[in-house]
Length: 218
Image 1 (cartoon, rainbow, N blue to C red):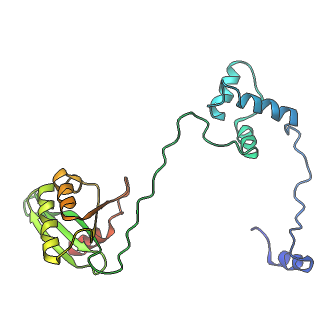
Image 2: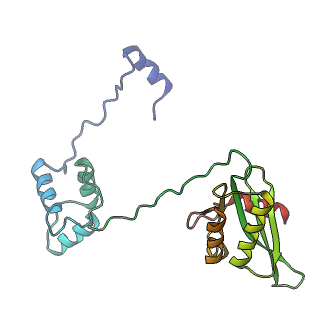
Image 3: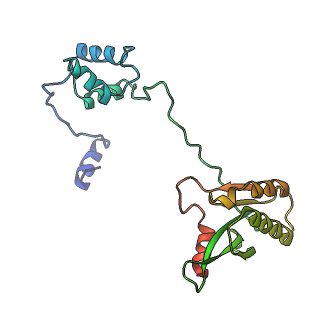
């Protein structure tokens, strides 16, 4: 708060009221009420109502008109609670993804694919792995020489069979890779009654359980 302890202790004697005086100097270039109304009329006009201050000021300057700076217009809009989206199109609203919490085993699974390097440089095998995020148990895993949503569908089928999973029992979380969102994989999840969950776009660490286990393995 920028206050020393002694200042607060001194204020406590009078009921702990803020006794800072603040500035007593009125800015010379402060806008008058008439000037504020004139600027507000320009901002509300059909020509400028859907433009931002950093667009309005240059347009007025091209006409040889100058009322105030961009920062002053922003300050006036905040004062009048008009500093909202000024264009006809609405900004995109990002919906927060649904959170899944595991309170026991076989409720939320996580799965991913990682590279397994071979002795031949540039060639890899692919480890498919599904794990339970509550118990950290690896419920199923397979190693293949390619990435495929069909192989991923086989893996989830095997995992559900081994763990005796019923429909609408588990949520399967993964990143946004093509095997995870392939048509065959999504159709198999729907057939088995498994709820798919995907990482948020551009969030690299949104599937930490599988990534952590891959790191330990390697």
